[in-house]
Amino acid sequence: MKCPNCHYKSTKVLDSRPIEEGQAIRRRRECEQCQFRFTTFERIEEVPLIVVKKEGTREEFSREKLMRGLIRACEKRPVAVEELERVTMDIEKELRNRGVSEVMSEDIGEMVMERLSDIDEVAYVRFASVYRQFKDINVFIDELKELIKHEDNE
Image (cartoon, rainbow, N blue to C red):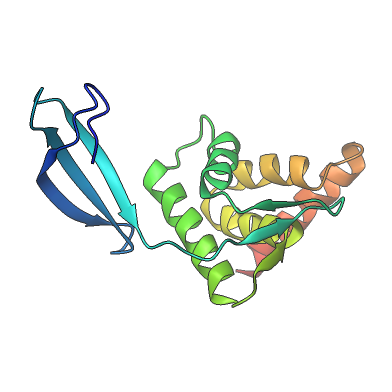
């Protein structure tokens, strides 16, 4: 592994630990020339998962993009980042376990909303308002009524 600081071609591993429920390894490394320390991550190379957008375009699934959307929805809410990381991992795992190479963006959106409704209602409404592109306040109110009905049934 090349040092990102001095570009020397030899580094040593100081520490390794499993992350993401054993699906990846985090390694702490040190350059043998300049002693610069840095972190690397190793994970299994997976078959690309393609997301088919509403307009028909395709792009590779991005766990980082999913995480950013969750963080945005939960901004200034009492939701731990670890909880959002767990949701992101769960959604990706469920998508990959389907055994298909393409998934509709609507499916991902519904999965996110399902999980957010259990975590934080305000974050759920924020995400739903963007995802479902509420046209006016009546659609927004209808969504809130559905959320309240869901809460009453639990």
